[in-house]
Length: 595
Ligand code: ADP
Image 1 (cartoon, helix red, strand yellow):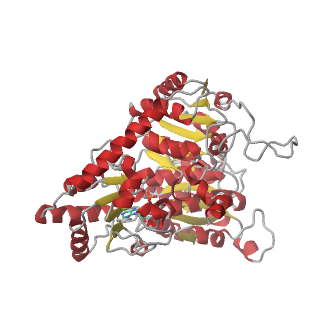
Image 2 (cartoon, rainbow, N blue to C red; image 1 turned 180 degrees about the vertical axis):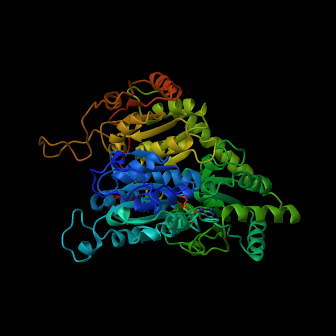
Image 3 (tube, rainbow, N blue to C red; image 1 turned 90 degrees about the vertical axis):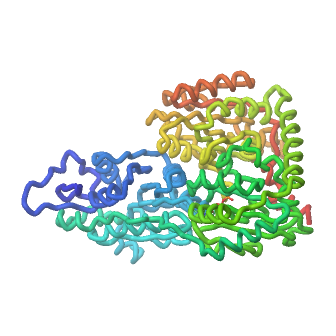
């Protein structure tokens, strides 16, 4: 249904109450209503944003028209929420910001969505084109369209009210088709107030047909890939977050089980098959990557997180060396193939269609499972590493260190495999990734491709709104600082989010000192003994300060069960933690030392 109202002013003082429906024959609609109609026609139900000139009325009208508007305290968090909603649903998440500074605040998260291949659209209000283009100094003047371009998959500006329908359709298709990504949609203030005939407006709305069409690989690519896999002696499968995103869970599991190939999972692909699956090689990752003679990548890129497929991690001699391995890769982007190492069997297609085609072929032609010597060696290595980890986890420390606290968290989270775990930090991210097992797809949401800090509260809110289930956000104290003010948003919408902060008084750790003896703290140090739990209490949520694993278990269990906003401040030894967690080698000094 198209909504019809008297054309409204872009002036913020115009409120909904002042806009009376027209009853005359020549009914009119406007830019505000057409944006909303276009989103609704494409089944958008939620907008994540932050209001101000010129989008305040757009947000009000969206809410009045039945869309959910989740208002944030900083644009980056709203855009992160939309991005993770896109990842979880395969539909573009929608974010909305004001012009120039609000747009730029959101752009960082929009770029992060693009880098991670999450489908979303950021809609930003913008100022007068004529003034911007002549650089005459408008309120919040910025050439937003061009500023966005390098960081997004596509960007569009709508100049005429009659183009809103087609522009929204284009933005949706750009976000979800092929390799998903972030799209920028520029909405000048003047456009929102533009009026047009309501019937013509209704006709201009476009419902996108098949926004993410299947991409089916050629039969010869399927045969070639299976030949490579069948000739391998020590194959391994690497699942990436593209595989989780694809929502082809049952077929991926059937493929792994029918081939009998051991599998590894990138961080956000953990749980696609349960981490305790008998074919999981996760605890023998280093061994499997070094020893494998064939690696099948399913929705995972050979970027820095996989040492670019080269060097000692992969059994090569030095970091430039391509190890002697065959690679099979499934990716929707054909351009991804050969990005770092030669791909022997590229499968350019969507994961759902490609896995279905591979399954069909092995049902017909059969597949011999890998030799027991290979799977047995992986199992032996896994068992030894799991036993080693169990020993570390059982050692108690007071004050708690990361492992003591994680041991308690792991036991509680095991009882709720159905809920999302958001995770960021340095040590808090790296250690939690290995300690906390995942059992269901798309439940682990973390710093992703950039290893970025600041996704915490945005992802937690996006996940809670999208799934309607409890969410746990496990945060380093430094990481939490980037989005911490959103605890107010969590309380305002009464979301079932339990934030757990591993508080060791600083970035990496809190024991650094200023070498000059001056009054300023060292660059990595925060206020000692800070009580983050009080922040949640300030807005009416539940706060807990815990110093033992027993207290942590109890507070976490209660937080999840209550379904209420909760923040648990976990006191961690300020001497615990290592510089930069597991990526210390990327610091210039460590890199220089190595040379
Ligand atoms: P990870 O960080 O888990 O290794 P990446 O983000 O590096 O994962 O890789 C995800 C890959 O998955 C991207 O190259 C992207 O093009 C691909 N991808 C995303 N969705 C699909 C899909 N539906 N089918 C095939 N490939 C996909």
